[in-house]
Amino acid sequence: MMSKLPPSASIATALSGDKLHAPSAERNAEALTDLLTRIAPPTGQALEIASGTGQHITGFARALPNLIWTPSEVSAERIASIAAYRSEAHLPNLNTPINLDACASGWSRESMRYDLILTVNLLHLISTLAAKTLIAEVADALTPGGTLMLYGPFLRDNQTTSDGDARFHADLQASDPAIGYKDRDTVLGWGQSARLIPTQCIDMPANNLALVFKSP
Ligand SMILES: C[S@@+](CC[C@H](N)C(=O)[O-])C[C@H]1O[C@@H](n2cnc3c(N)ncnc32)[C@H](O)[C@@H]1O
Image (cartoon, rainbow, N blue to C red; front, side, top):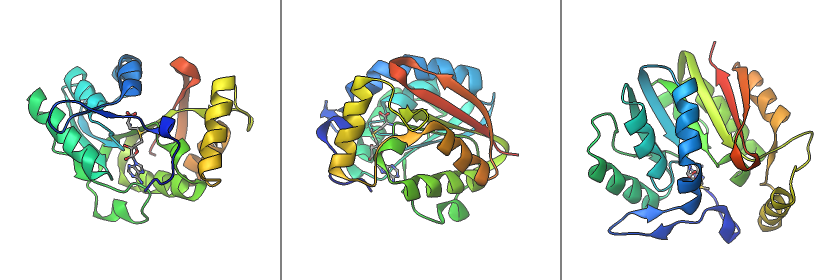
């Protein structure tokens, strides 16, 4: 679970009912949906880790109707928000959200297998140990040939690459020295240690990256 984050790390405000609205999710939704139409498997089961408000996965499920989408979260408030977006959307391929702490060791043992697993803007908010655990669990939860996509801000050669990123990374580390941006090549290496094959590193808007891996 996250604690002590700076306010800028995960902003979401209340809409009607249980629905929350995250401005950042609105800003990057189109680029992410576009990316997924290019890298996602044509059919199968997709798991989103840390679905947040539910804004993203509702759009993903609408844009990629041949995948069955399962949202997940650790926050009860956000699970309620995802459920509210889901019931409004009436999408047959969008499952009810599940409670999943993706950094807990062992969750993949109880999990079904997925053809696609993705997470957006989580890795910089968790510790190195938690991130390595997440990647190892995801590797075990993927079907053979399955796809992992990790999206967010990353260091390159252990450096931030803009003033805004430097400030945000410093704010995160000031709130908790164990968290903050992870280095792109280090994360690719964690994937390889978990027997995943890095296949693409895609530049995304706002200096973010999408790291794509395949399960052997
Ligand atoms: C910055 S928000 C991103 C939400 C969403 N993916 C988006 O881009 O709008 C980070 C989310 O990670 C969730 N989270 C934090 N720790 C988690 C964990 N261990 N497992 C699953 N979700 C977690 C938080 O509840 C929060 O909703």
